[in-house]
Length: 373
Ligand code: B12
Image (cartoon, rainbow, N blue to C red; front, top):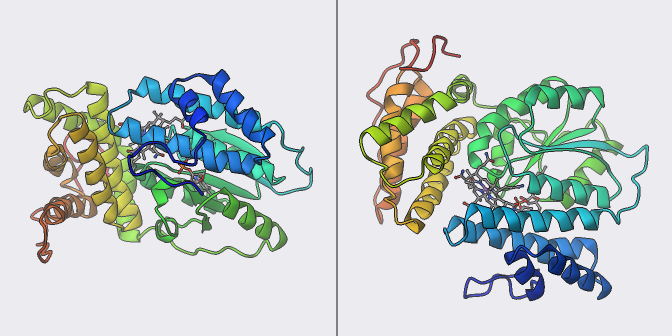
């Protein structure tokens, strides 16, 4: 297993030539390094785990700290992706009567590399895989899974801000009698978030998913998790997702008008605000407030690395008060989030959350359309 070196550089056990090639966007050199590792006896799984995945996580750190541009990140990711497909082409043909799984990201998620890794590892274990990948259309995905009688649908989410959308998609798939296995960084390190959104199972990695799918094929009755979205919050999750785009526009305009994000690229600002709004919806969907703390830490790091004011999160929450005022669960959460984040910034001290000042009225929020659900 690889470990990070103390200097924050690439893993000490990751092949240095591979890393250099990925960092330079040089796919020929990267291929040469992978060929050498194969010739030295490393298996596909080992090359993936100890080199490609370590490199990809390192790419993420460099991008998140602002050391790398999006273009550098894209180039490095595509070198890794190309080699992943190349390695996968050595897999044996899957058994025709083996379990069939559909693998996709949650709607709106561009992190297709993770779903590709999952697909390739499942295929390496002989499973039949239909890889749909990033930013799927939910209706098309549902139709496809039903028509091809998938034994399971595997959904990947890297962004915690995707968990609200994931809860809606999981529900629709489960309503059709499909089994849904979820995984990816957004779910954290245990099954709690997966259980809260009603998935059949959470798996930490592709190998665990292989075991789960294989077991389910032998015992179709087993279905491990039995959770559901907290009923009181699910309406507000749907509402937040329905008006997410408008809410992001409302907040970004508000920030600009107040001169509160003067030096921020408009595309970046929109992405960050969208992530925060998505995290509010995810918090309601999973009843897990640590999502807000993660979002605050994440954006704080991104802003600080770019010499921008990390207080932007508070200003976004202030601006959101008005549009969410008519929704009790969402309004309560926005109110609590301010207090929770302030407490998290204090070194110590008890957390006392007074009730929100707003009361629920079923009127549409400012600029958010006519219907509430
Ligand atoms: C590459 C990348 C992108 C690329 C994606 C390109 C692509 N083709 O995939 C681009 C540039 C598009 C991108 C965009 C954004 N990204 Co991005 N991205 C990454 C990055 C650097 C690598 C992701 C990756 O491929 N990892 C390698 C995979 C193989 O590892 P993995 O995800 O952990 O997956 C493993 C397991 O989790 C598991 N698994 C994954 N899925 C599943 C599913 C199942 C069923 C199972 C069983 C297991 C499983 O198995 C995998 C193999 O071991 C990460 C940083 C990082 N450290 O990972 C950020 C990261 C995921 N991105 C992040 C963010 C915030 C964004 C943006 C919002 C940025 C913005 N706009 O400001 C956008 C959102 C775009 C969108 N709507 O999706 C954050 C997420 C933070 C959070 N907590 O939500 C991260 C963590 C970066 C960071 N440190 O801040 N990103």
